[in-house]
Length: 287
Image 1 (cartoon, rainbow, N blue to C red):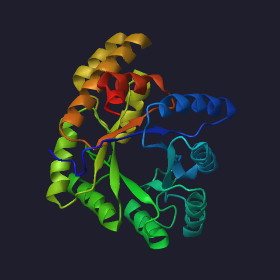
Image 2 (cartoon, one colour):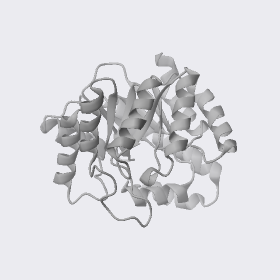
Image 3 (cartoon, helix red, strand yellow):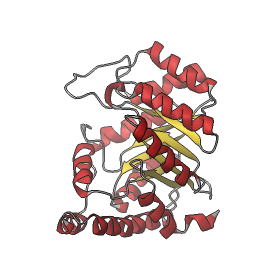
Image 4 (cartoon, rainbow, N blue to C red):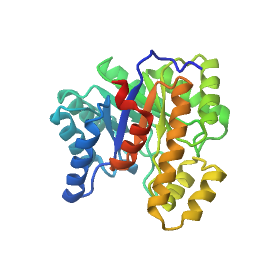
């Protein structure tokens, strides 16, 4: 199965903006460790409804100015006007940012729909292309197990194609633990004429209760064999993490064997879980 790219996989790590200086210092230590692995970029998330707007900007500019790894900010159109987006994107361009992750974004808790001037990520992608041409490489989201708010699977695929047609260069998937879901998604979108690279999003397993909560919210399935093993460990954090490294390593091995164009690790602002998977895969030896 060809994933639509050349032979050199692209590896990256994602962070969320810290809430305070203590968290910022922890993230600096995490970034320093993960930078040693030589990733293509570090992405930084954007909170629901723009709730982390300033902290995202600060974190992105700090990463960019460090100069070790390129920064790729998430940009959301929820709760943002055209003028606000233009100002933010202009700032990123002025600071040398060349890659964006363009998303519709999540509504803040308790908010109604229709916040902001764009309803869909495809509109945001088109706006970026209209105003900035090819300056930015634009990543968009993909959902192998389908977006939890999608009306049906076909409409979800159509929304993805619209983002690509609007000017997306590549995509990062929501995390998943069933490699067949990724393979099937690729087959469907390739049949629709989509050829951009689609990089699997990888979620290391750190805490089961946290993972279960995230997965329920975003529609990511935790296979039964994994759930039962993780539930059986209870509060045994060491066993949960060891099992997580084992099962996620196997997932990554299969994805790379199928021709995945890289891996995007949702680091949860921690270095060790992603490092362990990275070392198991022997990725350092590839360089």
